[in-house]
Length: 328
Image (cartoon, rainbow, N blue to C red; front, side, top):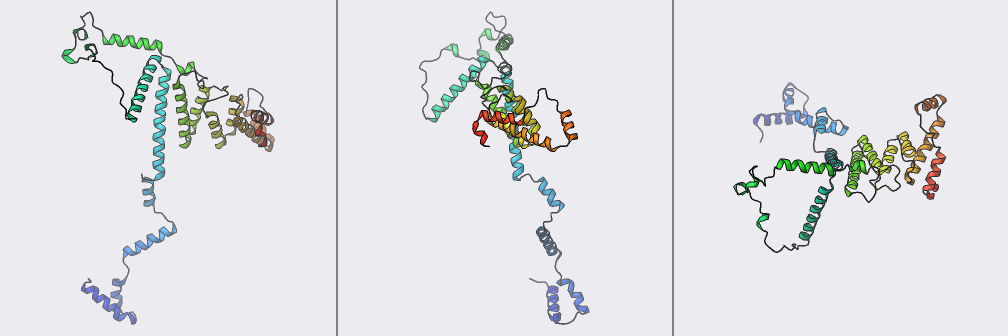
């Protein structure tokens, strides 16, 4: 519903629309102009079409917590942090490994698995017949016997002294599996927790690669290689191939050549041997393209303990590992 002055303005414009501009029309023109909100709306539409983003919108997008990339990064960081905590707990467990406690844990875990399996099959395990005697009762408060309360009783056992004896016995039984089985973590004769530790190391490496934390991935995979043994022909993990691939993706050819030519010189994996051969071949071609000054600088910077192996020898080693490699 229009107000009276709006109706008058509309009539004046309708009547004087075919006439030239007059003083009365100049007074009526402010009522016929477009509103500021419509102009600002058209301006925003024009800016959005042109791809212009204001500073306020950019700040809002930067501070938004609901983007897919940010949620994925948070999920990855949480997973990586949890895996690192599990790795630290597993390392502490291996450094003070107690066979008696581990056997009890394994026994409890087996009983729990058996109970879970029985519940899944909807069958309850059979209960033992017979009533337990008073020797199995655990009395609390004033019902406790005297030898558990008063130290002047002959049968009294000091809980602190008992705990000290248990700690001393545990210290004598505990072993450092990281030092004992170093270089033999891939064998089947060692406890299974060693392989679990290798699995956590591999998880930390892959998650660090996904999060672009290359230093953490390198440390995890190098530790994995060291625990498996550099001279082991049948490793149980793919730490060597993963580390070599990371070096190649990052174009760190010198580090890849040192890994395949020095540290893993006795590795019989065709993937390692062929990658080392390609890196050595590319380095030799780069040396040929350089001038004399760059060659002198490279020779002065590199002081290998043993003479370097030629690319041809690397290719021969790769073909010896797998003759099909010659087709590539």
